[in-house]
Length: 164
Image (cartoon, rainbow, N blue to C red; front, side, top):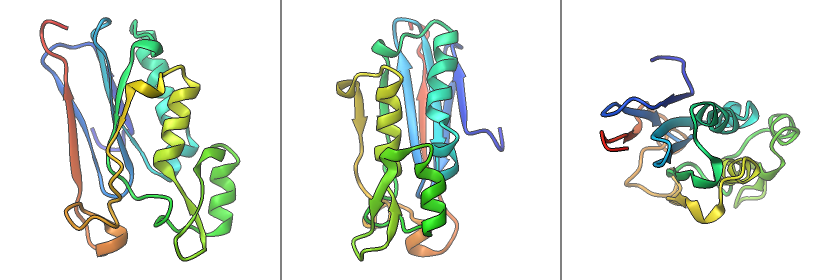
């Protein structure tokens, strides 16, 4: 589905996923409730609190945030995601945990950190959040629009098996 930042389902044997370049992909699951989700959070998604909305939709389907396991995929890190001061201020007004500075000393956002903070705010245990902390800009094995200046993506997928 084009233009969607997250998808939540209880449907068995249905794979859901997201594609991302430098944005933060998340895969969420409550095995007991049989609810899974895939979400994508770039700067706008972090500011719109997409991951919070995703957890709320999962809860509507019977998930419990304390049982959620979340995979946070590789994304551009706070040392590399340079943004203008106005963009930083707008984002930080909603997601203060995104505050960062590039390794060269300019205004930046740490989107993976903001996503983890929003998950904690929802009641997801930090021990249940598994992060791939590789930076897409720094790791040449990963695609980065910021580094390469051309289109491409990584995909991440989650599927609920028939037995939950």
